[in-house]
Length: 180
Image 1 (cartoon, helix red, strand yellow):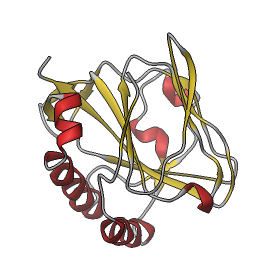
Image 2: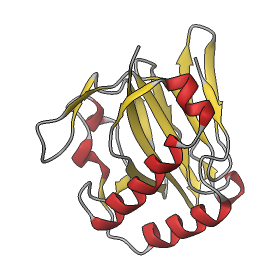
Image 3: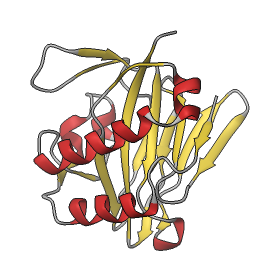
């Protein structure tokens, strides 16, 4: 399953989110990578507990709760707090599979990662490279969506982000534990 969920965020929400993220502090993205994926991850990320990450994450989760396509496809029980990543200057994320279980930082809560989600926060015309490549039984699928659109796919899928060669690619990544 590879599902395009259009218009999770409105254009106005995307502009607001981007302004807030662009002004926030960014750190090495490997801080949230597991042992194996840290060897192939090269991006920047906003710290998980940064106030902007928490506020913008709440905006995304609220939008997901109002999205009938997301609700019917994911049957979400829990959504991991969204992470925010930026790729620029040749940065990429090599082939990896997401962690099966994620600990919500600073809590005892653990989430089984049934589905992975990437919410694109800038349009494809704003950057070169940065395609999300997801492999499944039917081959490799290249995903590069409009700002505010999201792709949903099994967290067990081998996937990667190609190097960004012009400007920057900004997105939110998170995981869903399904009721199924």
